[in-house]
Image 1 (cartoon, rainbow, N blue to C red):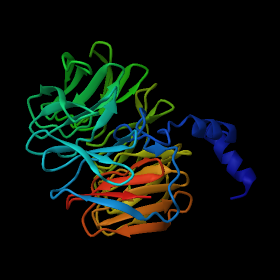
Image 2 (image 1 turned 45 degrees about the vertical axis):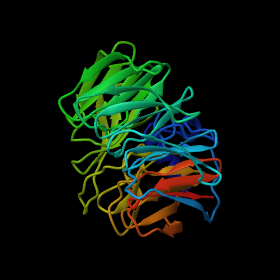
Image 3 (image 1 turned 180 degrees about the vertical axis):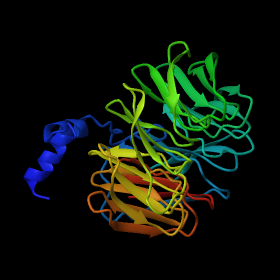
Image 4 (image 1 turned 135 degrees about the horizontal axis):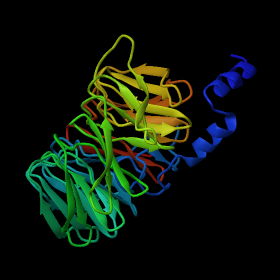
Length: 376
């Protein structure tokens, strides 16, 4: 397409090159030296300001013994991650040395830690929220919900938000663990709420997209999420992007409370469990169709797809011009965002359902055989 035709196409969509540059500049990035919670940024964009080596090498591996589905947080040179043994681990980012281990419940599943205010927060499969002191791994407080927790916490100011499979979103005081409020839905709360302008947004397993006021837990509004949703939502410029178990990716306009577009692969119709990343007008997420999908954020059309050998439940993380994602085929991939080509891969052998965490030039991810891997 000639540049003139390309600009005309943009104008037809109400977009301009200046708008696209501004959009890219506004996309939230995690600081280069921190990845404080699942997806890295408050907008859950999955983007880091760090730089990852073109051909990363395995710097260290920590052997945990049981599956690690939790994704890491990285703060102040320490990696925090939950394990199937029910332990919250603190490992040195530089060398993988165990700094402390905290026993939560019988098992920690997909709940990934959030670090704020000198504490690390995580949920376990017994339904308990734990607050642990980062300095020594000692417990600060616990709060018990009515069912297992697979959601990951997010900390906003002095409040910890946490979803539970009892169907509720909880707001707990970060300092003391006391219940500020709870918001009930009609099914599991699995995804991490994305807080924008004092409102927590999440697409639930009840097929409803919820917007809940952080101040008091009252519902600001709701609309159809169009399908059962386990993924966390990414929000950029008042549009939420997320995949569903109805085999679609949805762009929901928050101002209009209406679907802007839906994407469905023309041939391979499988659920999307991976949470979306967003950079430079591109939405990137994995599917249970074994593919990584890169979609145009304005139109929902596919820019490219990449086929792996097994489903992708891992959520991609982005640094520079590359997306990093694990696959259940036992490989960790680095993909060039412009072309969709694999530019590096590591063959681990065990499925990678955990999501990459990026900070200080390093990538950390867990495996279903209980290893924590760090690449530099």
